Image (tube, rainbow, N blue to C red; front, top):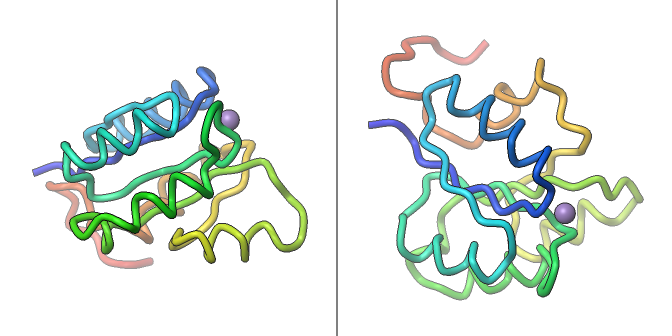
Length: 131
Ligand code: MN
């Protein structure tokens, strides 16, 4: 079964690009455009990975990550922050909030899937090992 990726991202262009890249690679994508919607979906769809924008309307990505980690069923799901924040310390802040890793915007289509795959099992049908 295809891995399910929940994207929590308010920017339509980024949401479109990430969705396109993941669906083309065989992942199932679930979309949320704000943190509260993302938290509700995370509890209902049992995602294999959550891609989390940090700059979100309402509650920000740090608060979303902390909330997700407070739910027993979501304690183990990989959360990868996707953010244009580039300052020293932001990476540590995402990890402190409960994220497993950090991807920088702008999304690079050539490296994105490889970056994401490090946090996921391979899509069904893919027989390759680690490069
Ligand atoms: Mn944003």
